[in-house]
Amino acid sequence: MMMNENYVKRELDEKFDAVHEKLDLILEQIKKINGRVGKLESWRSLLAGSWGIFIVFVIPLITYIFVTTFTSIEKKISDHIVQTK
Image 1 (spheres, helix red, strand yellow):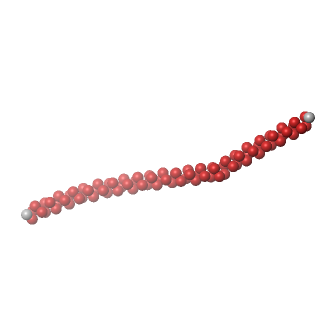
Image 2: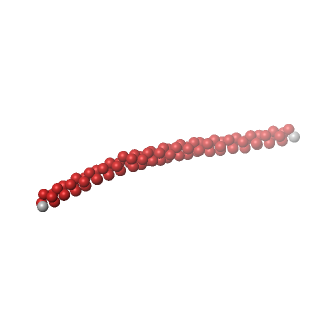
Image 3: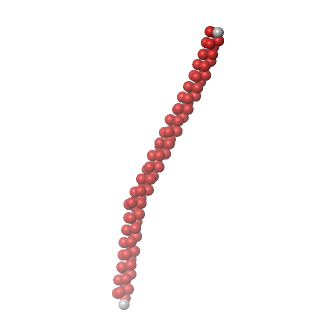
């Protein structure tokens, strides 16, 4: 009976070693995937921040330029109309 118990223990040890090797491989893959996900989340945050800056600064600047340009053109046209009368 002792011989049989050693044999079973050795088989179990081999199976557990195989399971541990597979778990180690899975852990490596998970670490790689987590790194990739972290990089994607960083990019997403960067883009979200860039979009915020665009909305807060660029759109008002474009609006200001647009309004001042057309106000200036409108003033020149109205001045020209007044001078020609």
